[in-house]
Amino acid sequence: MESRVRQGLHCLPNYQPYHKIRGPLFTECHIPMQPMVNLALRVLREAGEELVHAVERFDFERSSDQEISKFIADCSIGTEKQIIFKLRKHFPDDSFQGRETGRQEREAPTGTVWLINPLEGQENFRSGLPLFSLVLACQVNGKTEHALIVNPMSGQEFTATRGRGAEMSGRRIRTGDKTKVNQSIIGVKYPGIADSDHNQRLRIRLSNLASQTRLIRALGDDALSLAHLAAGHLDAVWLTDVDSTVIQAGSLIAKEAGCLITDLSGGALYEEGDLIASNPKLLKSVFKSSL
Image 1 (cartoon, one colour):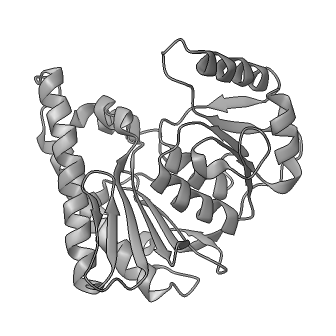
Image 2 (cartoon, one colour; image 1 turned 45 degrees about the horizontal axis):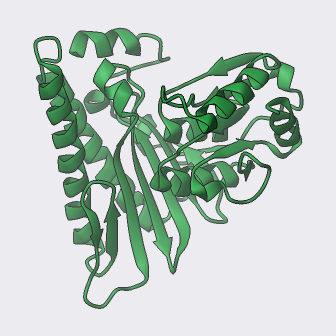
């Protein structure tokens, strides 16, 4: 597994192994970071480091599919428990909603809930692609106020606080300004192999979109797709069946970077799992191109 991961990482600029990164990437902050986000980011870094170490120790090549599936499940559950344990040290009265462990309420809840996806992009993780992430969203009285997405292999950290903009590794980010679909790079998520009417309609719309755009990219990680849209590395995203925590974290980061988001009908119900996002000048064209 390690050799496959390392081969994939050669395509990333200025790559260093996560656990060897020190200096400006993690310490140079041009925008004062919210203390709550700073503490949560520290927790995700530590959990990400442990996840990378686990990957490097596990022998994917000699393991059966069943053993690999168990390893991935153990990593997800263990990472989530570690994140909750460390967050609780800082925020003992808050509640937690984990993808693996469910809801953990306090006796006297504060109204603050941490949503946790410990391993987004599991198929990439299984295949040795260095495109998976840890995702965290902090909700206060039902509204997402803080968001964090960390790629532990590249060390890229995407954060946002409502009303304060979005950052990548301490630097403010802004989505791109493309206005034409035929000049745009669009991140997508293809539907599963099930031959349903719904999936067939999605495939037709994606085919329509692909025929009119410059490039299509399927990253295999919805959180990173939204994060890279926010950073201007993608010009739009067209995603389906997105995890709820990813939607909360990714949409806040994207919006704070200047993106608009709709559902696949052009409405406001994207939190149900299907969404299109881009800068305001491009969104309508992306939507129409998929019809």
